[in-house]
Image (cartoon, rainbow, N blue to C red):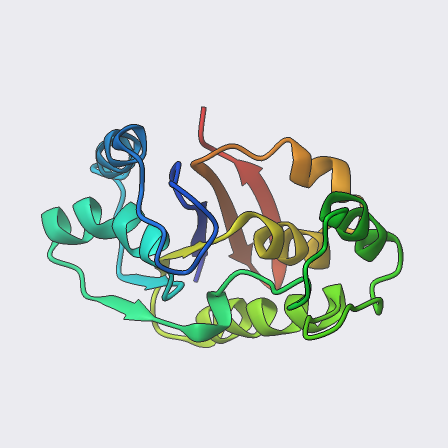
Length: 180
């Protein structure tokens, strides 16, 4: 059996907090995503509990009458709980040292482990066509788990939204960016 796991980075949002809504443009992007997936079979949708992720997938779930499962493990990675004015450089450093973590935060390896667990459980599930909606940093770490050449530079080039397809057949995985 071939498994298709579509990994979606949320649409354009008004901020980074867990309750940040999509922008007007983000809502239009969510509709475009629903149209993009209109001719694709989808069995299951799993999303981050963050509002922007839920709003990203609502048009598709409504049209396809597909239940949306909330999974805390898809929440964006917490870099740290203290103010990090130079967060960009700190984030870059966590891609070099995957164990590096800051006060109240999690290392790249810790964040990677939780999202990889979701994907591995999905591969073992009965669903053949699953959508996972999450956030840029943790998605980059997920993809890095399967393709070690993915790095901080890759993260800087992500778009809102962005869509990747993981295709699993005979224990082999291929990765494609399918959002144009």
